[in-house]
Length: 328
Image 1 (cartoon, helix red, strand yellow):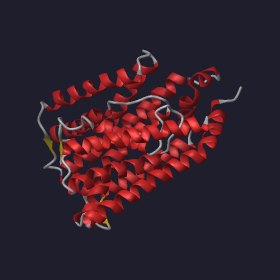
Image 2 (spheres, helix red, strand yellow):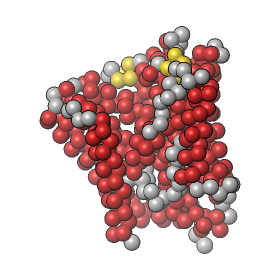
Image 3 (spheres, helix red, strand yellow):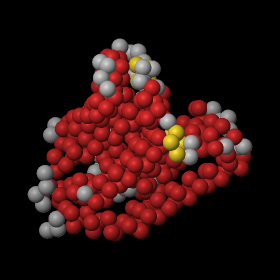
Image 4 (cartoon, helix red, strand yellow):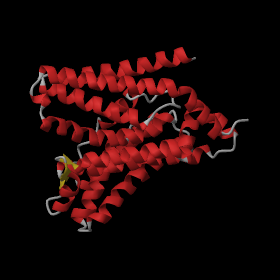
């Protein structure tokens, strides 16, 4: 019997051409979007707008990276948006209410996200709840906790100017630091997914969980770890969105999980599991941001933006299904 590592590596090699093609198609779609909006809207071509797209992508991109790990295992995480909100509130409480230094608040936010993610993993792996139900329930738990801890009031970081300057400050090419943090997180996530045991078992779980279990792997433990990674990235996203807003907003976050899942799917991560990449997810996040901002600049109503984004996601899933049928 093949080991899960050998199985996942074989699976990855077979999908290499299709996976690369999916990323290429996503990159082509992104280029076409840029060219289209640039040709019909002069404000879209400004450097300030390109910077806005980069900043808007930072939060969703980081969220989508964590979701990518989960979807590759064949699962789903609907709680990342409100987990992000809860983590920003935890950061605000530690730094503003407790008066502790920023270097303690940042790991507290990350730890809160990892904890929520691991709780999701325990509910799914140990309690055998379907991922959709477990993370949907955790969505409301995290949302409620964020409102309880903040007393349903924004927590402002006015007394911590170093927080804003550290993340939204511009140190290179006039681009806010959150963008470079996103790319740094993408490099780290990609290395974990492709070069570590966690990454190999992530693909193995999505390719054939039962075969992985029969080969002696502690499937439950690795599944909990994967959801913990998703929560960890949600914690980082909570830090980034708090720095962007200079506050922890307990009412923000609901709906972000859909954009994160959309970015992963558009970038080639299969909802059937066993296939995906961080590079594709980042491209997908840029497509979502470019489409949203481009439609806003051209005056498209918010209602139609939702319709168009939804159709794009449906098209991405449909193309994934067609690709898998042809490969079969």
